[in-house]
Length: 476
Image (cartoon, rainbow, N blue to C red):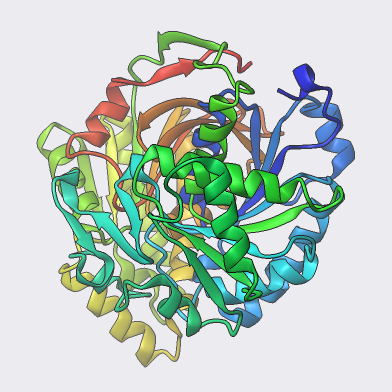
């Protein structure tokens, strides 16, 4: 799109508060025909110009969802500062579509305050959490999410998974109330009725809201037409900032809203011109690393084991042991290598669902050792990342799947790759990515990063076989 319009700067930059969320945005933009590159560290403008001169959108995959507000400040200020140098039209702080956060962990309110201080242009911060394509809806400010299989939709504070999330259980479905615990910035609502009808009327309703000077405007999201209306409002607000980036927060619904509007306005093709319709095909072997406690992932693990995958339960308590977990890590590496040498695909998993007693055992052991939850989860993630790298290199693996947002972040960083591009779709919100690395043994690795709630029961077998994975043909 930049080539066609003569744009000299990115249309959009984004920071993802976890890795699966970051690849969700990567998929949403790339599948709409916008060339998008996702980096693991904030990139230099010069390097982007050399390697990806025509990129329409630039992302940075982060892990702020697992951080305290103080840690978020240390993480976000320098990264957002670097992205500001790229002079995008819109700067998006990407959060999980289930909005799970708290004042102590992954505070979306604090992230908005930080983002607003770095990107002060614009009259308000747009906030959009709903993604109808992923079964996430905001209705009169209350958030809803589909359950396992997508057959039933739950209010967030009654959702069977999110209401019992081990780190940030959601006990409030009204996003304005939830957010008020994390920031003093007032939030107004553009509800379903306000987003309905001829656009001049929709625009006038927004202007009436802005008379009260809200710091944040939350947009309802139920269907594609209202999503496109929200996208147009956000895009036009970004056009009023005098060349400075407008800061926005929310799920990949931001990208679906913007691309929905831009396509309706004739600025995007109906179908990405680079799509070839070809399939990635079957991988010789698939390594799966799961740190998710989601019942959806638990069902996927059980299905994979029933279909012939080898499975090894990660000994979390031993890895967190008083000896530093060195021996447990060596034993796990040896057992994993033995399975892979047999030619089998392998699932390494820390839990098989939210009720797995290993979760409580690990929490108790960590507490006894004086480790706070973010600390021991980070230690475990680093262990899993180092293990995944050793296994991929030792066995020449070409395809790797990771389940769990925080786990995906630590594993991907442990692999020491530099950037990702969208390659294909495995399931909505769970894309296949092409990895870039200075290490030629890892360059070209096919990496699937899956949030706990994403994918159907047979997801892992589908990823192994390459079923429904259509190649995005413009990638090298």
